Length: 160
Image (tube, rainbow, N blue to C red):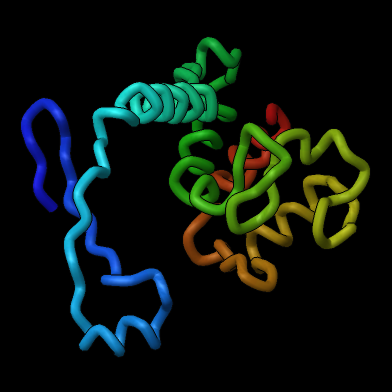
C-alpha cells in the first residue's frame, strides 16, 4: 500500500482480468497493480463514521459514580455487608440490576416473593442456606463467612 501525505493514494492488488480463476491461471497467475483508489474521497465519510462510533460508545456507557454508604443511608451493619458483597458476591451478581453476570442480578431480590432461579421463597432463611451451601455454579461460603458476616450481608441485600 502506498500513501501520499495529502491525497491518500492507495495501490490495490486486483487480478489481471476480471474473468475469474480460469482467466487468472490463463494469464500465468500474474497480478497487476491498479491505481486510482483515493481515500481522500472518503475522508468525510470516514470522519462521520468515526464520530458516530464515538457517540455510540459514549451513549452505551452506563458510567455512574458509585454512591457512598452515607449517600445510600446504610447503617454500620449494612455498610459491612456491602463490603462483603463487593469482595465475595459482586463478581457474579449485579447489585444494581436484575440482569446478572454469571449468577442472577440481586436488585430487589427480597421484594419478590420467590428467588429468581431456584423458585424458593425469598426470605433470610433460604438465602442464608444458599450463601452457606452454594448452588450449581456458586461456591458455598460456610468456611469463609461467619454468621455475623452473613447477617451483615443479608442486611445489605435487603437494601438492594
